[in-house]
Structures are given as C-alpha cells and as structure tokens.
Length: 207
Length: 233
Image 1 (cartoon, rainbow over the protein chains, first blue to last red):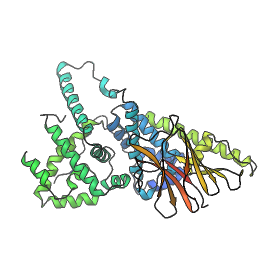
Image 2 (tube, rainbow over the protein chains, first blue to last red):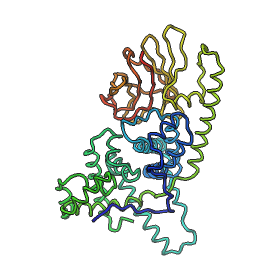
Image 3 (cartoon, rainbow over the protein chains, first blue to last red):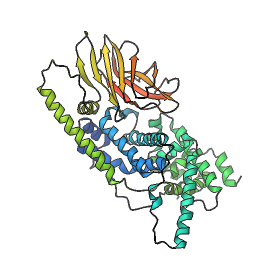
Image 4 (cartoon, helix red, strand yellow):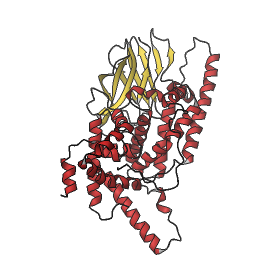
C-alpha cells in the first residue's frame, strides 16, 4: 500500500510541540496572547516556527529574507491577533499563509537584489573532485526543480507550497483562501502533473 | 504521450491522488483513499506517478529547524511590548478618568492591537470618538474617527496593496458576514490615507479592511489587514 513520504535533508529537526491532549489548543493560546501572555505566544512560536521557516524558504530561497518573513508574521500574530478569526479557518493556515504572503512581498520588493541561498557557500573546502562533481550535479537538479516550481501558475504553486512545505490540509488551505476544497485539490493535481512533466523532460533531473 | 500521461489526463476517479501524495488529506480521508486504491488500478497508477514528483519536493527547500536567532529577536520584541503595555497601563490608572488619551505611543498601540481595538478619546464635538484599530503590518497604525454615527479611517505607514490589488472597506454587524462598501483605496508613497467610511455606522460591530482584486469584491478574498472594533452606535 502506497504511503506519502517526506524525505528530509540537513540536520535532524527537533520535534515541535504538536497539539496533544497534554498541550493547550491553538484557540486557548490565542486567547492568552490577546491578553498579552508572552509565554503563550512562545508556545505558539515553538509549535509553528519550523513549518513557517520551511514555507518562507520555499518562496524566498534566501535565508535572510525567509527569517524576516517568519519574524514579521509571528510579530503580527502578537500585535494583531484580533485579525485572526477562528470561524474562517485554523490558526496554522492563517499564520502560515501570512508567512508565505510576506515572503512573496519581500521577494517582490527586492526583485533586483537576488541573493543566493545561504548554503551555496558552505561547500566542504577539502572535497575531492568526485565529491564536487556529484554535489554540482545535485545542485543543478535542485535548481531545475526550484525553477520548475517557480514556473507553475501562481494558483497551483501556492497550493502545493502550502500543502507540502507549510503542511496544511486541503481543507485548511481551502478555508484560508476562500475556495472550494475541490478547487484546491484540482490545482494540486494540475500543478503536480506539470511539475512531473517539467522534471521528466530532464533525465535524472530529480536530485 | 505515455500510457501514464493518458491515464492521468483521462482519470476522473477523484482529485484525491495529488492531495494524498502531498500529505494534504485529513487522516480519515487518507485512510478512505487507501482503501479505495486497493480496488482501483487507475488511482494506484496515478499515486505511483505523482509520488515520484512529490518525493523530489524536499530537495527544493531544505528541511531545517528555524534558526534560533528568529525566536530570540521575536521574543525580545514581544517581552518589550508586554513590559511597555504594563507600564502604560500603570500610567493610565494614575490619570484622571476624564482626561483624554490623545498621545498614542508604541506601547499603547501594542496594548491596543493585542485586544483588537481600543478607544483612545472621546469628547470635543458631541459624540466624537477615536478608536485605535488593529493592523497586521508591524509598523503601520490606523485610527477610526467617529462622529455623529459616521467614520473616517486615518492610516499611517500602511504598506501599499500588492500589484493588482486595492484596499476595500467592509462593515460587519454581529452574527453576519462582512458587507462590502464602495470604498476602495490605496495609500500615498508614505503609507498615509484618510478614508471616509460610508453609511451610518449604527449597529456596526467592526470595520474591516482587506486587499481585494481591482474593482473590489462582494465577498472578502483575504483576511483583514485592519480591524476596528466599536460598540454599537
């Protein structure tokens, strides 16, 4: 039976404080944040920071701007929590969509100053020629994948990034964007199909 | 076109395969879909094809923990805001009750947005009030001036709406969806605007501003970027 898998790269990620029976719900934490409770806010930060950073990186591909987008979004949660309306959707969707919007705004504002990814300069300086060649091929594949994502229609790119990098469900995405669930799933299907065709045009393009 | 392409294009077995491989189905939906796949070769094939693509997505973005310095900066600002709000609350308790609080510092603004709106002043012309609104943009401010049941929204350092969008004003009554107005606006290069809120505000619980497509919308397409809460007038 096939199951969705998520490969990871980089150092192990410490587990976030996911909502369990023993940890307070998002709704109760937001109420405390509205009353000025900094500790409640810290709990929400720990709960969503990783996903926020990942979705920001998926847009910015630059560590500095991704950090700025995450910082702005969480400060907005602290200073303007009243603008979050629970009846419109989950806190995760509100927050992580906000991160993505801020990341897009930052990229547009700085369109002339494209920065390289933070890890571009972190090559092992003592790597031998074979390691370097393999790493170069992998980076080229990653760049093709990112270019293919960027080439998707904005609506398809948005739902794929919110689903995969922000880890939102189709229902959360639909509620946040004000769309029917079927439309969101349809955009996912079309977007993944285009991505498959774009990557399939390059033999061995998948790193 | 390969057989897989044909099957992909012609499949009308449901839209769930892509959502499934992206991990976007709810737990129960995923379980139901897996049961369906046991009897549906088309869906199994579609998942197999799309899974290869989904498995490549982590390579486009590093799966890393958020850098610690983000939390340090955010919590530093949060604790400073909380400290300032406590100081301001203590100062206000010392002021005479009839004295209007017209000077708005960052601390008052922080306390105001934390509770989603705060009356700043009343007096002057009969029935006039000033209400601090909540704003999502960190450095922006919005004040609602109310007089004789009519309002004016005054904005400072508000970011311009993104390309192809314009700000729209909504009136929300308790228990109802926001009602659109014909007030569409942008801001100056400095982020300033003075916007008339149309109509009589009697019975209005909140005034909202959202970025909408040019020409405005009948239903909000974005969460509010400004919220002014007011008691029923």
